[in-house]
Image (tube, rainbow, N blue to C red; front, side):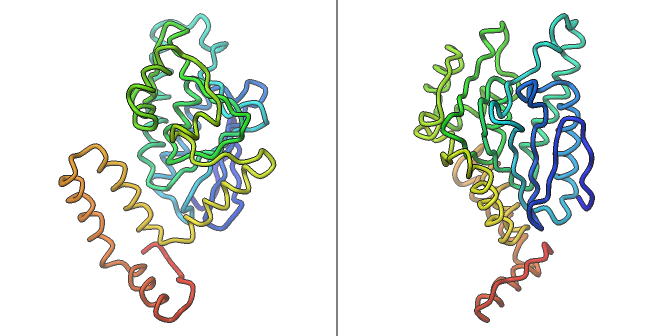
Length: 266
């Protein structure tokens, strides 16, 4: 991504040479996910996955202080035909899958409430930092639907099957302290330092060899869906692809020369 695209519902920034900051940018609607945002996210994650250019890590957050993402925009959905609802959801499905499959690590900075599809979007990030005031809920069953953007898959993987069943079936709200205790959130950050701390983590990731980072991310993601030995064979395939890279040579050379490596992603 040499040039940042312009989106109606997303605000993009380059706070560092190799880092992309993405803000869900509908603060008046609590950053609710509407069709336009779904299309924008699908385009962004597809672009970043297929041609990241100099981007080595992305941070995803919400505009404003009230919400990361309040979930699907129910005002837009009010009165939708079944066909229109399914067509919209198809856009959401492809956007969320593109986020999960994106080779570039994506760190979520949860700046406020993450409900329904907002929590599902956060769960699709590689890991999360959050403000203490953030609240979370997988609230779909209150609306006569159920999680449909990987919530029934990612939440159990984050907090365990039995706790995920409780949270999804009761639709109850939980706070950032619980989210951290259960392993859903990696770090709770004071609001004034949330973006700074998340960007600091992103920059630490971006300082490492980008091909190695992407291969490691892919190995973790896919390996967890396999038995141990099959996952290990997958890991070795990912590992061996790095042996012939210039970055591997540079990393060893820099270590022996006692200097910072200059990774080029090749």
